[in-house]
Length: 251
Image 1: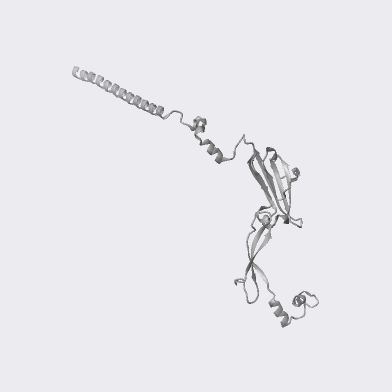
Image 2: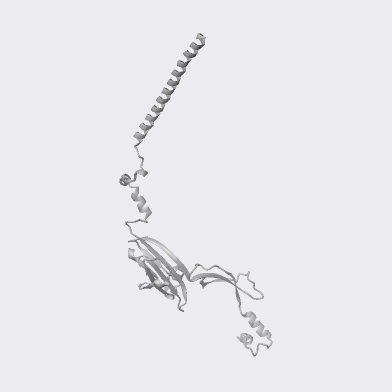
């Protein structure tokens, strides 16, 4: 500690360092960050992995004495607008903290919700305070049509510094208008009893026997017409031939 006092004291900073002071400075371990990973999230509070290595005259950054540590990081606290389209009657859960913040402990943050009824917007003047018992998430089960709107979540740390803000726009569809469950709808459509309810465009306009008879009739008509044309040409050729022969002999 005396070596640091010598370095920091303005009255003694000009005094030369003794060999004992230099040895004490060499014994103090110094670390430098040689690699830092990107933040685990694009917005809000996340984690960054850093690699630290000791630095002195004998050990360099390529030695095995390096260690890893995780530190908090925030690239930006504004997460923007997320839109969700859900059918009425389903289960909807709006999570604000995320996996990283949940791992840090939900009681380490202050979460507040605001709500703009019936519209999807980021205009903060249209939001009113949302009273909800669960601070981390909002659970709407079952979801109602009047629950549509935009939910704004603000997260602050224990020092009341804002670390995240996200807008979640919820659009609620009536089940009578549209069903978003494709698997259930496909299973319903493929039932044998529902084949009769298919539209005419999705079925054959005529039975297979009728199509076969129509093709045979068309073929017969085509063959008959070809034979009649051939017979007419044949008769016309032989009617004109005697006239030519007669005209030649008569001259």
